[in-house]
Amino acid sequence: MNTQEAIEKLKNKFGEKILEASSPRENRLYIKVSNDALVEAAKYLREELGFDMAISAGGTDYPKKNVIELFWIIWSSTDNVTLILKTDVDRENPKIPTLRDIWLGVQKFERETWELLGVEYEGHPNLKPLLLPEDWNEGYPLRKDFKLEPYRAPWGDEEK
Amino acid sequence: MSDMMVYRGNPFNEIEELGDGMFRLHMGPQHPISGQGRFIILTDGERVFDIEVDIGYSHRGTEKLLEHRTFIQGIVPVERMVMIDTANILMGYIGAVERILGVEPPPRANYIRTIVMEMNRIISHLYALGLLSESAAWNPAVFLWTTADREPFLDLLEMLTGARWSYSFFVPGGVRADIPRGFKERLLVTLDWFEKRIDVIEEAWIYNELFRMRTEGMGVISRQEAIEWGVAGPNLRASGVAYDTRKNEPYAAYGELDFKMVTHTAGDAYARGWARVEEMRVSVDIIRQAIENMPDGPVRVRVPQRAKPGEALFRVETSRGEMNVYIVSDGKDKPYRVKISPASFRNFLAIEMIPKTQTVLLADAPVLIYSFDPWFLDADR
Image (cartoon, rainbow over the protein chains, first blue to last red):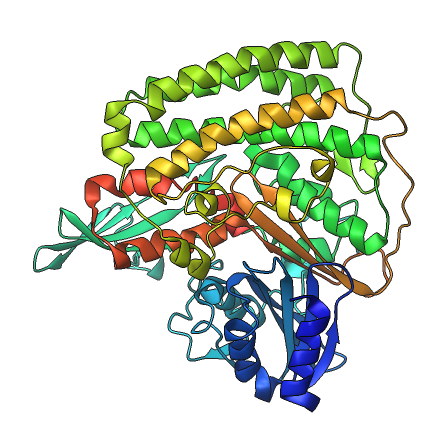
């Protein structure tokens, strides 16, 4: 199955819920779904289209659009295609169902995104601090409004 | 008594007694280069019921740092992630940057990169094998063997790049320098010598009865589980999954070279160790081909400072497994977001899952952990 067939199948199945779909280079598939169809789309991608191995997950903060764009990167062991599955969540109240039950490999990546971006993965069994100290309460470092000033070296930095 | 005097738990307590004969054991390397970390092991003194990997002791916020640095300034924070494997780690970042800047390095630079990366892989695998055999309660002097064996490669890298570690040798658009006079001859002599050393290593460890008894059938991961948990690198190939980024998505000069992908089907600690020995032999083969077939030409091209808005994902096979770098650009000279997913971060999930699927004894826990070649600074970023 090539990437164009996968895009057509997804569009037939989910219609309007697929917001963006493209394949800019060989073996790459970028899919953006609306967040209410995320879990069904993920199940379909896993069971019907053969994307079985999770290799990354994370998010990007867009304060101007007031969204956090989440992504999950999945590889298909049968077709050797890498999928970047994306969806937007509201920045004020970022909540999304976990995909950990579909791809176990994203478990630690979702935990890390919860910690660094403040996204609540509903149904995730183990949301507790991973990289930051246990008593960290200074905000979410990967958000764009996180101020670096208190952490700069006293002798200055090259960027102001 | 002031608040300063109140400790949360006793920091000198390595073993916590939980009652009913159960203990929580805190085990972990505390080492300035290979990193700080902790394996929290739930045990009754004989069997391991649960392993939790506690990382984050040296989290440097690399992803955030990169958002505040230009593309070329990002080289230094990225390659510090894994000191022993800097070339492969840096290739992930440089590859993603080149993809988002829309440049292709010249062919000669690709071949030089390949040679440096494979030498780095040999160095890293030697270190991993030294730790694995040491943890398998074999003679710790073996670790000194492998440390000595990587010296000639470090000298060669110093000759080529000017540094033994953290070379910052790859830049967007190529490499910093061409190979110096006399490098090729010295490299070929070293490879001839090293091939004999691999035979010695294989005979001493892989066919060694004691090493086999300690590692065979231990920490088995089936093919299905390896895919499910997202295991990376030689650990994945030892479970029978034929994935090697160098083959599946060729970068640098790998697409033009003919080499073998090492796979095993057993999926145990023994297969993971053996896969690393065989991969060193494959690396020697790749370096020989690359130095013979190296084209002439420039080693660096000019690159634009600013990227076009867009995104790029680059996958690279580091010594510990596949790492991917996902860059989002908004058209400035700095990335808008960089997501680095290192191999050790994924392998740690497998270490946590194994005690849930099979019986692991406490005495086997170090062998289990080191068979994955973990690297805390990699996972911490």
